[in-house]
Amino acid sequence: MTLAEIKTTARNAAFAARKIAHAAGPGRAAEILAEVLAPHRDAVLAGYMPMRSEIDPLPAMAAHQGPVAVPVIAGKDQPLTFRAWSAGARMVPGAFGALIPETGDWLTPSVLIVPLLAFDRHGFRLGYGGGFYDRTLEQLRAKGLVTAIGFAYGAQELPSIPVESTDQPLDLIVTEAGVILPSP
Image: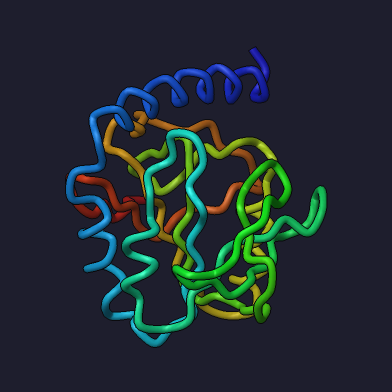
């Protein structure tokens, strides 16, 4: 089986696990995420607009005291850009149906809340396969420090994620059960 086939199989299983977890509810996940973000209160935070069964970071984003942005897909094979967001922002459909602010400043985040399908204890994530977050994290890390926080249901954990050389690890993962600090 090729790496692409392994990832496709893992994605299908992860979608199913996430859907079940989503139906059960997020528990304290948003509260735990807000606690993790508290020391970064002045930092530019990038979250995401949840789609389908993704865990919802909006309460933690709205509680953040510093600037908040959401990702905008600039084009295929390009890193994400980030537009300022607030709870009252007028949103319009962007690429792949994700909502984006209609207007607003372009920001460079130093903290990213990263959506995912699955994660492992080494900090690797399985995304949707477009590589947008990997390219973005690589670019931001080349410019200096950035903290990448995976946000997921605990049920999305796998023993290991199939990894490619371009995959960027997460700095920590937040679930409804608590914070996971990746091990090497």
